[in-house]
Length: 182
Ligand code: HEM
Ligand code: HEM
Image (cartoon, rainbow, N blue to C red; front, top):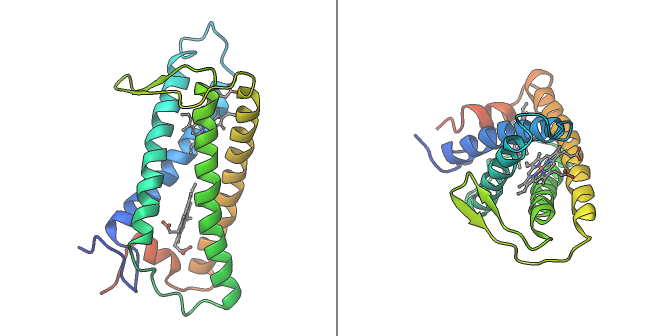
């Protein structure tokens, strides 16, 4: 079992991170969208945002680990892609890292700009590192705009992956599902 990437595919760690985080990010988007519709009479008024922030911070930690893991691993060989496909894929991947990072930092600031800390599953206390009252609204706007942008990128990215698999019939999707073939 290859834990690390090889030239023929993504290793187990990269694949588990990829699919686990894709699931987590889609779920957080749905949860975020839904929790904004709750009124204070709802039994989930407190627990839904608590879950959103807690899972969100786990995603944040995984994103940082994933970036370090990516930099310490080889990229699977993409020599069968055209130059445009290669540049497009690289741009998409780095856009994901940048957008997700800023979105999650903005999420952290929505909760902490008033100087208060918050808990991850009531286990870890996340302190406020910078407080500036009045900026929460801006952090909220950045957070939701980038959350929607993430969904748009994911749609494009998944469409490209399916195109490679079903139309171009290459190993792109296989390399992220089955991993290396050596
Ligand atoms: C992949 C990660 C995440 C996604 C996809 C996501 C998505 C969303 C969405 C769609 C909303 C509703 C936005 C709206 O319609 O106004 C939302 C709200 C919110 N999110 Fe996230 N979120 C993520 C991570 C985080 C993190 C890490 C935190 C903080 C630790 C956080 C804190 C919040 C807060 C406080 C709100 C409520 C904002 C408000 O009431 O104005 N989110 N999120
Ligand atoms: C929010 C959801 C998603 C995010 C954030 C995401 C992000 C990424 C990133 C950053 C990479 C580069 C490798 C890495 O750094 O791990 C990647 C590769 C890949 N993703 Fe996704 N992905 C998502 C959803 C999907 C979906 C739904 C599919 C399939 C339908 C998919 C298929 C692939 C494939 C085939 C690769 C490897 C080929 C390539 O280099 O593009 N991804 N993804």
